[in-house]
Length: 74
Image 1: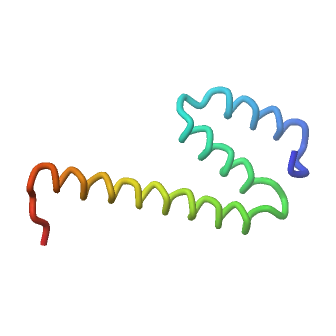
Image 2 (image 1 turned 60 degrees about the vertical axis):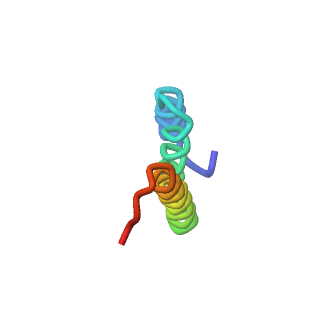
């Protein structure tokens, strides 16, 4: 698994099975990848993309809610 030790793999499996939601599992997987040797840059980009996607989804939901409630933002 990404060139990590057996102990790191066991911890990774424990973290992933202990995650409550799909978002938790995705975030934990990204954090595990960040800890693997040689994967930091790739994982950072993945994490940024994941957070950007969540930010865009939240922004769209807020705009939709504002529209539903007829709220005008500055």
